[in-house]
Image (cartoon, rainbow, N blue to C red):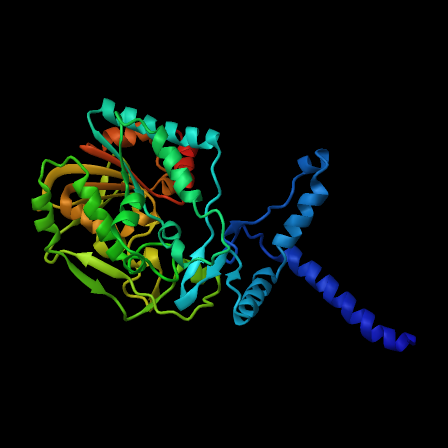
Length: 400
């Protein structure tokens, strides 16, 4: 090869190499990967040099922060899908366009003890203030639809094992445990369960949420008979909204790889009048419904939070209903599975205070102060069976 020919190879190669180096240096650091559903490696500090881990961490950092990384991942996943692979990225692609998540890993005994101690502590605080306390475990899609997974998938009992260990450590004299996973698996067959979840998202829909809520209400001490509750539930109507695109969380992480029409379902009472207030623990600020519920109602597309309620909108959200079925107030520490139940709770209780532990860092109150100032009759923790550990960890981080 002569020198002239070598220039045509070396110069473009060096240009690309230095070009990528410069672009990586100028690009803003990314903290999270939607496509992989994980936190990305951050730039190592000088401390890593002292600990002799700088080189290893920098390699991971450079790989995670590579400027076209997300694009390359998406191209690869589209190729895998075209090859009809059942496992693409962090998901399984089932028949009939079902996107299924991975099963949770077993939690250590130490972690489970730590988490149950937090729940028991909330029970102690609440009971000392004269409140009834409940822990509701909502049924995550992964645990309800095991029959849709490929036969080679292992660890299918992981969620049940974590849930049952947590349940065994919760003090029954302090807290009443409502296990919706157990109820759903006993009550409904596979096809019925499928109708309660989004195909492209990790949540249940309005139908699944309504079925769960009926159980919650009947297992609470509300001073009302099951016959009266059944009469109340018989008045509900169902509406499916099909006039806009639904962006499922799993499908979004796969760069909308699956062409599937999912639709939010609402189960509701007609002619109800609610009042909404954003609350900082001490003062209520009245807001319009469209600022907190279904905030994407006027957009061309929406995701689960935009269709129901998003955590950022209910860091502390109070809903009042003078015509509620029961003259009681409830405080709910919630995750996103609570969202389709928001109106259902507001139909049942005269006052509902919804608190999302992921969004109250800027509220200068302890959990005891939140519970006390809520003036509620009932305190409920409502977390799903897959991700309860991350929610309780958020409570620990703020201080319980």
